[in-house]
Length: 196
Length: 196
DNA sequence: TTTTATTAATTGAACGTTCAATAAAAATAA
DNA sequence: TTATTTTTATTGAACGTTCAATTAATAAAA
Image 1 (cartoon, rainbow over the protein chains, first blue to last red):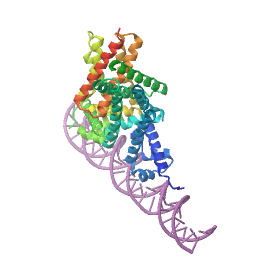
Image 2: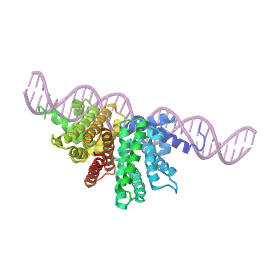
Image 3: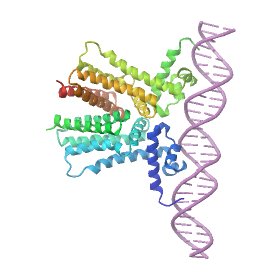
Image 4: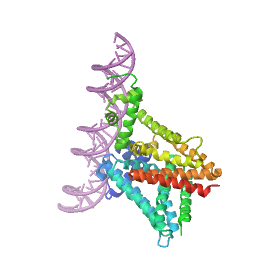
């Protein structure tokens, strides 16, 4: 069975299986058995590659966060206008769904757990502050600094709020699309309201 | 030790202890031992009064939801104007904090778990729809029906989003107050934007 | 004494971790 | 090439722990 160079493959398999398991069973219901079964591997392999269950959980969060970051970078170029950039930020945040329908539930589980896990809280804060600072720098190109900070705070809350309500009500993809449009509409209304 | 008529007292003790335990340890880390220890009672008493751990968890969610409902009713009278009523809705939702600082973290835990627990999901949906319908009926007094529904959807998302971000960043009470003001300001801007 | 209220002890299932064993692949030697 | 050794990858059973639930015992009140 063993082939060399399996490490990156196995790591990704286990991370994918973790996302699936947390989406299906929740973080409470996720065990090393539920993960390894979904990955088609043995339970021992988790400790081998990630030191233990907690290590795998953290690696999975890191993977989701880096994916979100990549989604945004993928869209933005040097010629992107501030207005476009704001729309891309909205799209990248709602794309948390598109990649895998599973990931939405998984995000929520990790958010809740971050209240009781220092390491997860640190990771979650990095992400939250990045959203805020991305929004702020874009709004600053369109209005004064104080208004830009306010707009960014409101916009970040609107994005997270729309997304949260869509997840909690177990919305289908159409309803998610609808929420994404509402978020984009709100960005435009903020620009009109405060824009120079 | 045994006195008669202890049932309502014990039930409330155990519910309070559950809120404390979930706030401190999370839903994952909350056990019948952590609850009964906080309540100063034995673990067996939980099965006696609530049938088991799950029954106590559900009773606790019901208690939090009915509290939220009561907060709103407490504020609203027959002479309340639609504008005032909207402000009261915001206040009632942010008062999820004020009663006990613990409850915020507890809410988040229950929200996450509702993705994987049909009974909790039903309870959570009742609450979510009540917020939406309260907002809608108030906005309808100030604008046409279609705009009112849109305003209610945006407003509900803004309230939840501001609240969520405040909880996740482990904000102090001042920051919560700041978010409550932002939510009220947003209500007013919606009235101005769509108002007849 | 009977009923109510509560505890303390116990059970068995489920969990994460560890680790000795194994199998295949790669490297080396003949 | 063929045989031997070493390394890498993986398994799954065993272990100790933790948990929710149950049970029997106990204490107070009626």
